[in-house]
Image (cartoon, rainbow, N blue to C red; front, side, top):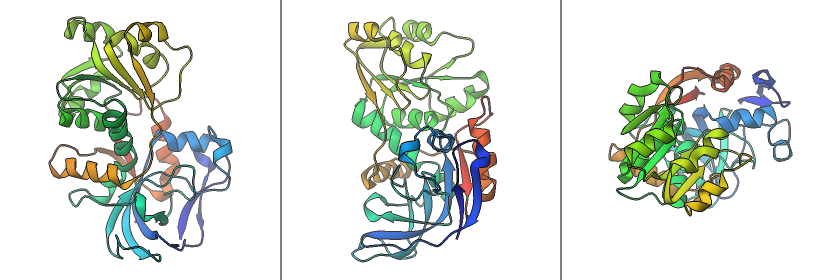
Length: 319
């Protein structure tokens, strides 16, 4: 099978398209012909060497799969050849998704939503699972509460806006002016141009000084350290990026805030919850660009570039 092999840590040119043996499913596993995968910030972080102790080289990386089951191992009863499935491979544990075939434990695999294409499904598995865990499990966002989603036009942010609206929250988001219409189409109630406006001032004005109940951070750095300034009493900050130094913990302490840092875990349950939202028309991933597997380095380079003009996710067509 064809696969993109990461032979050394570095830039997008570190990938090499190669022929490698097709994997064989073991007990409790399924063999999936990968129709599509996608690019996440985690993917270029792995590629450039942010986690060298967890990624032995050479390796196949990639963290999204949408495809069709070709074969099943002993003891598999949930799936059969021909089933369309989607999932996130176990992170830092085995082969990734930048290949024509992938083997996975049946426990992390879900039935692909029929209304989504493979490109759309592959754009949602990792970010959707991350957002679900961040907002429902960690933040415990409730009907009638308010949330600030940083980076609402991005791959994670545009999904977070939709999920927060499905829960019944009032959604504030920060984007560039060029992405106002897109953020509004996702369901955002208050859209803030982070390049021209102070989101803390706007949120305090819009909430009569109360602040938002939840801040969902996809950016890190100063964005995370300033988040407590926009937070309500007993508010929650949920971040999917590395811990920044220094933290604004004095302000957070004064508001009895709680902090949650999310590194998503794989399971079928989250995929099924997302599928239910998709079936009700409350969630749909936006594919902003599509590249073939052979052009994976170009896709990585684009996502990693600032002001890349993307809305939503970059999907990779494998089949």
